[in-house]
Image (tube, rainbow, N blue to C red; front, side, top):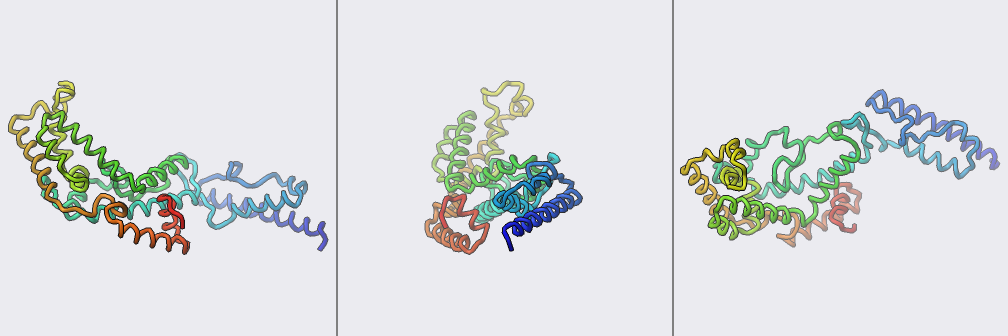
Length: 317
């Protein structure tokens, strides 16, 4: 076959592939309502360019048409009437899966601990006090690690918002994230105790280790109960305090709250928690090494979830 014939064959292949792209775009529109035509996602060029392109240009054009036609290339409607690339959505879901596994691993280690204020295990209280509609959105409380359940592309504004969510989860997978969040929580609790004039309780709370404070602050009713007292300080306006009911607390009510707060601090100090805070990371070095070894092996075997985990933890495989 001469070079001229070979070039003619290449041009014919490009025309056929362009026609296939047009068909796929029509199917996408019919099936999802997403109109890819004449957007930056549309790889098609005017038909007239095919006869003008040289071999290199034709091969480049054909490559873009083939990429669009690949099975992995697809689009999902977003909340704004636009679309999110299927590949970007799947990349996000891989990170979400790894994050949820970490959150579940952390929660499973403390779920059977009884909250002395609510007189229920953490798991029981979790089911009762956290509505499903809120849980679906991910961060439903000040808990550093809350599961992300039921998140759909149709509820996300656009691709930029999806990328932001992905970066947030990647940040939470960082080994330093959870200890840093617990430190912030301790500072907030200390401030609330200061505002309530409870320096003795602040001193008692200061004796809790990181694991004990994590349970007290993030999983028990400590913050809720303390908030009923701590917001009544003089730093808040009288009108606000009256609206929230703090100024209507009797001396007996305040004494009861103080006692509940003290009881929770005391019970937290009795907890023997050696493997809760870092979950997969610092508290158990041997466990961490085993996890990394397993993830590296799976990543090298092509497991996308393991590859995602290695990426966000800045590890080579």
